[in-house]
Picture 1: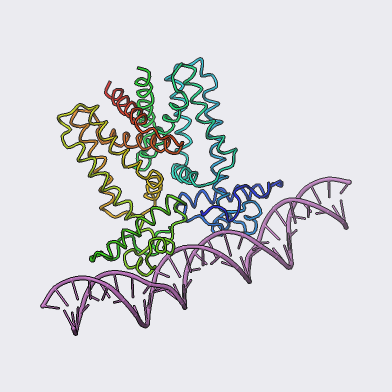
Picture 2: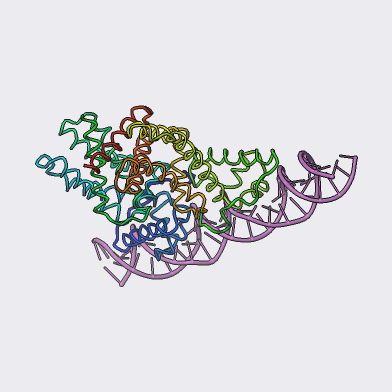
Length: 203
Length: 203
DNA sequence: GGAGTATACGAGTAATAACTCACATTCTGG
DNA sequence: CCAGAATGTGAGTTATTACTCGTATACTCC
């Protein structure tokens, strides 16, 4: 992952149906490898093989393995953001507690789909030179939360949003790594942390 | 990092002073590489070179690069645990708020010494087949917190300790990655999250 | 149905990194 | 000050992985 042997951005957009399927297969195979064996096990030869395509085809669409990681991260981010927006669309009509619960549900649902993958991508983000667009997505996810908070006159909404994202993420990681699978109990506890934090920051 | 090409445990313990210095130099060089360029950039040739020793010497003490990571993690854990114990030794004489603050101070001090390294080791832990002893250290760190909580009749002290460690870690990560360097403000906010969480879990 | 484009293939090359080993040097205890 | 143990060396071997390119097949649209 020493960065710049090749760029991060997709090399070429697939236009025909079979090539879109190939790209999807590469993403899925890579995700599985990451889940089973971690970052270090991901390599282009293996990803191609497991995706059922040739290395040559892989390099048609991804200039490097970092590009695969960046693509996976981008996709995940888009999904999460869309879900959060959907769920908080009518937030002005709801109590803070309800909005928080909905947002947490959305976040946890995404996380629990593929917890190991989430953690790996989270770490990978730190050293991937992300494109503008993916960085923007991260900011917008925080922004959704900040908007809800600002609307309720909570001071330092941006900072609070960052804290909330961080604490939720940390608690999900800890719980999932400990092998705990009771999602609804976890939601309850994260809600306690978030609302308890807001209580004290306001008081 | 596909795991088992060689074992994880130190191959041989250094006994003379110069070899202990070599081992220290290898740890320090590896830590720097991890901080500068991430997990993927760590390799035995580079670590040896930057430590000013030969690869042969490195392999005298570390059977693989995973062993270096495991050793770094073990050291960090030991330091943190010792510090937490020192700081919470007289916890029965103190208010919950004071103990929490002291423990957070200890944790944050450690984290801020080398935040990037901390995050890298945290991720690496997930796929390193850790020795009994290092896993034990993690449990004991949680145990220190659980002890304080149980002493105050907080239900589910072990679970709460895990949540608290998780939320603190997540908030430190988020803050540090955002480039925020105001440690005392961060402590205040983590305290709000922890105490707010406990308020709500008790109520 | 044929020209042009998109897609696919995978053996092969180059680079990188893990790891060994035969030999040299330094320490330590008696 | 000597024997044996500990430590150090780095060129060299082997394994792994990134990445290319010549060639073949499948679409698409006129």
